[in-house]
Length: 329
Figure: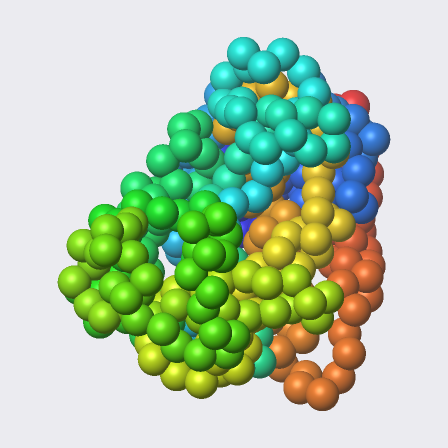
């Protein structure tokens, strides 16, 4: 929590300290509740006011960078977009159009980068998407992350189609696997299942022709028998490519766990929403870190959440009692 408090300015004249301000959203995160449900000392309005005065996207991103776990082994990097559905005014700052789902086609959207090792996975970057430039932001993230991690493979879904991104990956000597959008033209090619077929033999012209490296297409089936296609610069056994790409789905599983620590909010301030989401991600990473120290053991998120919540509540109770004694409440 110390790193979270560094985001706030504290000149000593405020009634509540940084620790007290930050303790409330952390508690709300662990309870999966709203700030108004959680807050007593200080209350919801005080917290929102302080956060709106001092938070910036740059400050929050700098905090994420400082909190990245150190991993020595080679990692797989996965990119994915996560939407926080919004049901209010579509003209609200920070809200963008997304695929219709759950009764709305508007959301506060985030691009996430996750590193995957043999036994753990961490979300190492989160960026709010105030536009649809997924590839541009992915390249920005990648340029930073290659300096900190030994990245051997990048996994991307079919939403990323800009060749500049794939050219950057190839120039960085990193392998990639991504999903091709299934089209009538692709199905008519009648590609054999579980076989690597050269991309250039399928398309005379296509999205990936400018990448500057031989690419291979794989026609695969999932457990339901549904067909899908992957494209990669790696020529390997189809089962290997399939298993490697399957690890990308872990990022979506991770999002479900992050959602279990979501801070419920109706605020229209996009920076505060981003901050709340990042707190949930940091709590998720703490859980992953603790769980990885006990290989073979099943440490449920609920158990970690209860331990952290008890510690925060004890802290808040002590500080609240001190305020009452001092006549400050």
